[in-house]
Length: 619
Image (tube, rainbow, N blue to C red; front, side, top):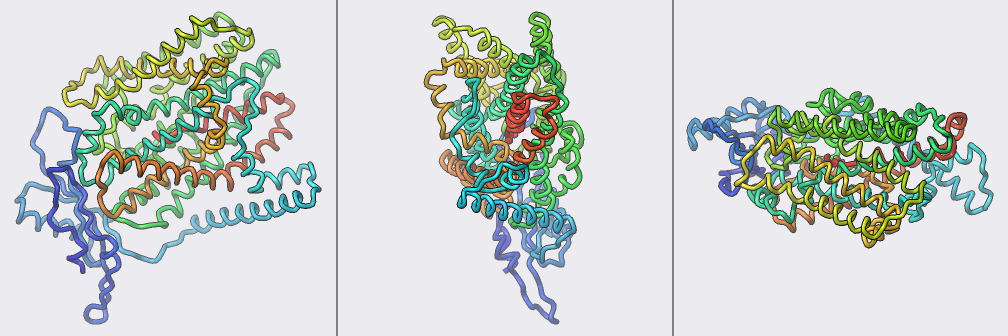
């Protein structure tokens, strides 16, 4: 049985097949009484075999040829070092001394009873407490609805804020209470999150066990797939929406209060609004997630993620994990919240200057935008960085250890371009709506032509960097990293302004489609839970997947559906109830410093700023 469960001679190496997983379930199910009454249990080990490469002047980024994962089933008494020596001795007779073999304790798995810690018990108790409160709150609302004696007291409102009936109504409602013409934002958020999740799915599928890794390299060279490869722009879209909504709504409040506005409550409640659900998911990573499955790569992915969360959870809730302990980041997509929070806290300076000084404000923000264009370009040129995050499969086996992701992509100073464009977009729309400016036919035509050209160019030019003939040029990379974000920001800015002023046309109708509103409300929770779906998929995968466009898209669609189902559960159990409590607190404590518009602004801007990717997604 031990021999039968192990991988035999590797097949398809020239085809890019680098995962030879044997039969995981057969191996871990072995329980042989053996001799002398000593039970022999199966232990599944996944060895990493590295071919010794000759020195080459050019780094090869495609394929998987230099690394092989080979499953070996051995008795549970064998240590990882012994397994490595065994595999090395076998290879010595076949490929001579041309390989190195690595096997860590995390690479070996034996089925054991769950080890429950005090943190596991505490987290489970918290979940059960919430479930109990939800159950009785739902019963209470059912009673009040049936007998028609609903009360408007503070206690009643607090109880109903936990009711699943109340929260489900809010989530699935297609009504949008928006007086500023910003309904299209919901559509942009929903569609962007769907494609971000699909991009994450593609990334985990391609970097996981596949039979033909070269197929992914062929797919990324096709311009038709550019939209999925430029998933980073969709993450930037969320960052822009966050800045846009904060800018637009805060300008309205500044007008109403004539500039006398205390932003401290806004910043505090923004933190309160985002952190609880975020912390619930982090604790799930630290406790029960690694215990909820098994598979060839489960230890390698899920246990590693747990260790990182145990080490760096505090950087997440302080929103500094894109600069501190980046090599131990908990939740690969969590960098987005840190970037958004850091920029959210400095945004009032620029928004107030735009409101206070008609000339100096735009100049100050434009200077900040110019600096945000120059800084990424200089860093990219100085360090010979990629022009953007390029999705080469073998570099994303562990995205946290990807050099570009860790050292450039997740940094706030590399992301400020799109945020300042969002602030300026909010300011421009504020001026247009308050001054009742009407676009001429020529202006609308010019705006749509410019927006479409910039959007298409910024999306599809990324395929150039995947072509076999492309030669890296630091100056080109430096220009691209800033200019393609600027082009994308301008394109999205026009789309938002056009839709908000009734000039959206077909796209405006699509983005204001009521069906997208419920998905828009779930984007934050979808962003939080998407990593669970991706890690679970790759951790439990028993056999390599054959990559085709159809299989990748079919899996991506299933990941989207699963992510939104989990998002609905998280939203009903934690996010919506806590949002209800936050509204009560705002009414009780924020009234002296915030008007009704300000309280709405806190919720709306926080709701936008907490959404992503990257993903989310992204990321």
